[in-house]
Image (cartoon, rainbow, N blue to C red; front, side, top):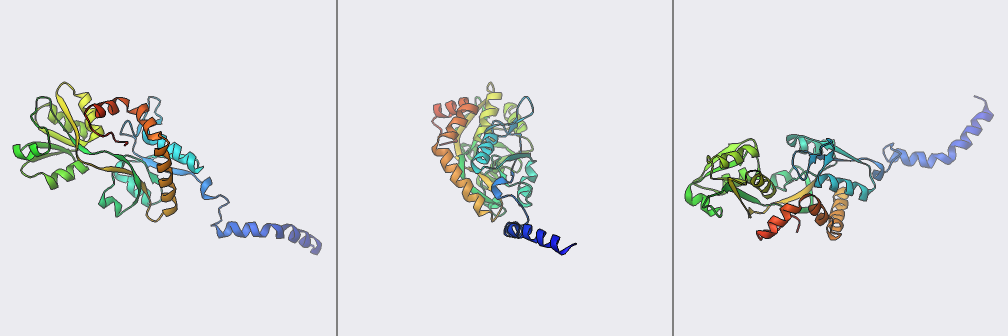
Length: 272
């Protein structure tokens, strides 16, 4: 290369050097965190929170939350439909940035991931036979009842720890647990309030929903351990979202009937 040409290239390169050095210091990426995709994982099998519509497009309360959060952060959104047993490992490995998937905060999970502030209170409750005399959880132990629970749920865990003298029927699917009640094979099914409400409406002729919570549980957004900046951003957004009435708007859009029923029964609705 000719000396004069080297001097020209050097003069062109020098003004660019500080910017290039800054990019290298930032990990060789020309994009800021705000420009990167926000990857949110959810299992789209829990309407009206996580589901697919008739066009097979993601829909539901959690989907709208993810969209609004990404817009607030100024980041493009990518939704990942993740099987439930793989959703926490996906967060831990960095395949997703957040879990917004009706995720109950538990001590065991808190050892593996961080959580945002709570945004839903969704207690355990019961589905019983339409003519059942059961009114509260105390009636279960007094009668030595046969109780259906879904394997691996907080209802299953609570029943094992709190109910003595009952027979547990442990099944894989919530719908199968409900059928145990409709067919008189179980005296009650213990599960979360929203699911119990939906199953009751499906079997209203044979069942009764006791929506008063046995024990309150909280849903929160799952965040990778140590990602404190994102956790603070999510918490700030949740606070503003609630104050702006956005959770109420989602409830009216997706759960108007449920909200009305809860209020008629004197049970606090999940967004309160």
